[in-house]
Image (tube, rainbow, N blue to C red; front, side, top):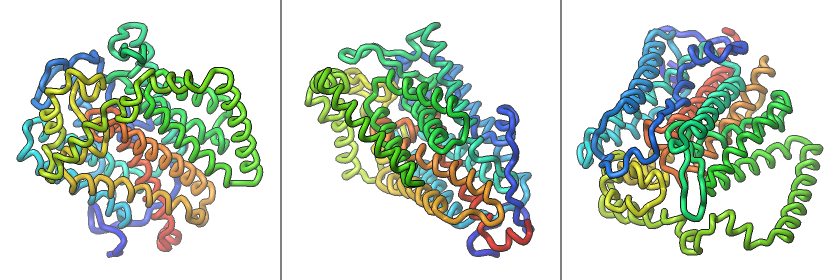
Length: 466
């Protein structure tokens, strides 16, 4: 057996021919690659205050929770069946290593059920974690023998996010309380609720569109309109973390594009100089203090320095983890521990259902330092694998496929970087049954799938057999 891979399925396997599928209709694409169905969430039409006064560390059932669980169970079952009947595959060792860490991270979450104050919730969400992981593995098996056009994957993901954004706008006119919140000092904030969380929906639309515009991967008009829609969605959230995360990712994208040619570098430098002049003019006319107060939603200096009270929660989690390095119990632990303080907190994830407003602190609180180390290992090994492969030479004999794959891989890396940055102020990226959690896993699946295709094509044997 090849030491760089493991057999999955029967004892015989062949190297697949790396010929991506043509453009599929949206429904056919979802049928062929069901992992993308996870990105829908699905939309839950539940009021923002639905959990007021409810102990969410204990199990509760309603129609929407049954729909959520049924959604993931159906997709995971579909993926597992497709995996069971798939032809044998060789998983490259780099991808296999990441999946191993993700699997053992899930086992750590399962162990935390034994000391969780809400063992039922912890056990249920641990199962959902593994169901999601099975969808990722199923996608890798799907693309092994039947790779897609990878840029089309990003286009379809953007279409799903647009659908969620449309549902948010529809709810805004029909039942504003489902997606909108009035906050003292900040005015009206369009949060998206559980229909299409605005912390994870519009920014990826803007990133994909900006990438496509700079690299001429679709109609310029479509890219511009989609980008403006994504940026507008980010601005109406009035969430500094989303705005800053999007700005950083777009800056990375622009710098990377500027390195592609001298002309791109000249355009980037010119755009930077013009932007600096415009910003300076606006500051001179409007006033720096007014702009600063608007950006910070008229918060006091103390609120700004404590990240609107988040740092207090983070310090509590760190102190608790120093005395209890095993954590508090998957998801339910922090909800139970922090529940007495929810009433004075304006942040939805703390006030409604509990959390830490930080993905990394959430994992630390869930199952301790070991879980945090494994989570970071999964994320950074995924980024490192994608980054290394993106820099490698074009696939031998398939230059068009290589160009498409590399563009998709590069854009998916930027999307994952956004998730990591936004995870500094939001814990939903690591909480099952949240749209952001599924979106991050879909992006990871994209990176691992595209990496698998590139690694297979780089095998010397595949060239002869294909």
